[in-house]
Length: 178
Ligand code: SF4
Ligand code: SF4
Image (cartoon, rainbow, N blue to C red; front, side, top):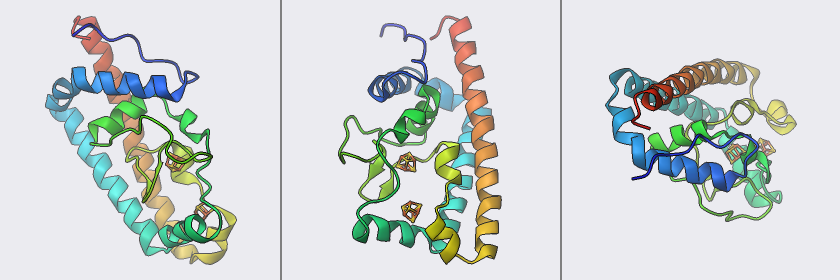
């Protein structure tokens, strides 16, 4: 297999960044996941993400978002938000078992909005942190505080994993493996 080019910049079209992430996954997934420290961090992120998704559901937020989708003309995951994702964050999602959609399935919506909500596991800070007025009015403040704490853990774990991926890719390149 031919070596891979540098990751496209954040400003590149999402299709190009997804294509790079898919190719990087095909080339490097076994090497990256064989790294014990890296795969432990991936597992930590999976666990942290599961905890904050669970807290969202418990607080009733998942149901409120589904209501927007089914009764109020669509969620706030609008077209263009996918452009906030960089190539490495997309590769992290691939390493966590996410299939990245090759085309927009829902015109007017973010590329990553699937039938059951967001398809990503490693999400951008703007996606993790966003709470609309409807949620702030409807949800118990204590539940929101607990959710904020869990989201903080999720984002910190994601940051460390993203940095570790950057470091490993640099190392692979310097040894001529990438
Ligand atoms: S965050 Fe708010 S506006 Fe967006 S889908 Fe959920 S409830 Fe609806
Ligand atoms: S939460 Fe997911 S679907 Fe919504 S804007 Fe973010 S990436 Fe897109």
